[in-house]
Length: 119
Image (tube, rainbow, N blue to C red; front, side, top):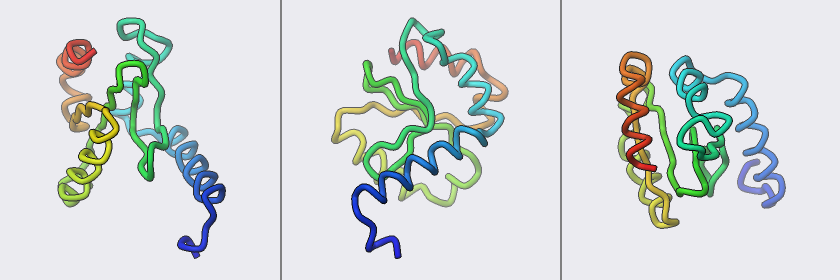
């Protein structure tokens, strides 16, 4: 049962799940990752599918405390959860940028300009 997990077991489960997410990224996440990886964006180091608190964030630049989230259709039904999640992450000093899959796939340059501006 998940409630009986130790901290170490919970962390291992999150790490396993984040690895699965890295292997099965959406088209929008893959496209954006090509622009963020290897310090291609203003020389900043981004990581993908990173466990943070009890969440897994899509992309994060630790140095700038910037999180980038790519929202698919499921996010339309979980707006309250996403708002609570953002609030918790902002309490830790992170800024969050949210983009829809459609924005990333069809307006990639605009998305990148917003990210560069946030950095």
